[in-house]
Image (cartoon, rainbow, N blue to C red; front, side):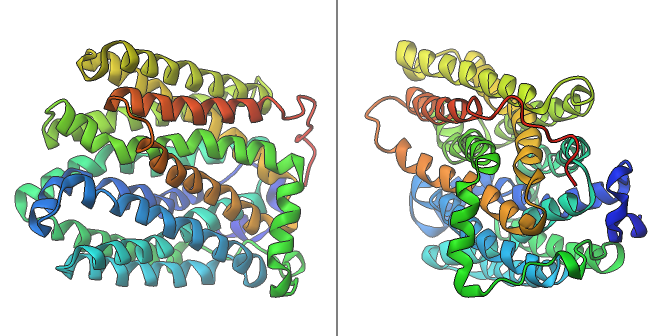
Length: 411
């Protein structure tokens, strides 16, 4: 495992499963941090003396930190390697988690959540870049799928874990748990991960050219169509995360425990399709699989919108949940394949490409969260319309990818 992660000559060999699973565990800090505290939002609101909708603003506050942090860690990891940024990010995450656990001011909570995200996002940036350093495109798609299996356990278990911790103690215990998980990631990095970026492949462009480098990356059609398209499709999930507690728990009167099961079911659909994707990439082109997943998401969000327009919050809950389920499950085909395509041609700026790709997801999530408040319709139609708009735009961009794009022989 060590030699595979260090040696660039291993790009033609199958990826090391244990190594990928460890990377997935590090990336899991992101969804775990978002999802574990969702069942606690009503009790947090009560504790702070505000509404649930107000305290839910800590979700987009977290997204802001993810956007900014990723854009910082990407070029940093291209310059100094992948491991040192992991230590920096996880240390920041642990400190911010402790502040979240101890604050008695809701605005300080928002600030701490943003800083917490500044630390947590290092995992997704660096691990994607490490996979790009080591593997070829179709193996990358398989690796992203396997990594999703590991990190995807987080959104399945996280709400249930949060609900369990609420029964044992108060919401502050959740953030103490997250601080401990950050310490675990530091230990994993120290004991099991090694540098994958050779000195000869590091990007030493002047810091003053950072914006120019990002601009050039955005102009590259081999990157921008799959990355922005996938960002719109993935960003819709973060819109759902922001809206779900109020829609499902308050709108339909679902308990925190049952909400955690529903949330986990959607995550299970996402994970299940990513595992199917591991086998599909052996038989179909990555672009074809990406397009099919995008269509599935558009159709599902259209169904949710129709239910909202026709029945509003009186829409039968199982149909609403089924529509959301397929919206989220479709990510299992769009995200690993779009990620592999977007990073394939970015050998010397894989960190930047990984950072920009990840940031796009959360920029869309923030923008989508604002869109939710613009439409004067019921909660179901509001979520359906927002997701349908974003997913339709993402699908349109995915269809602009050159169908003859050859990723098979890229180093």
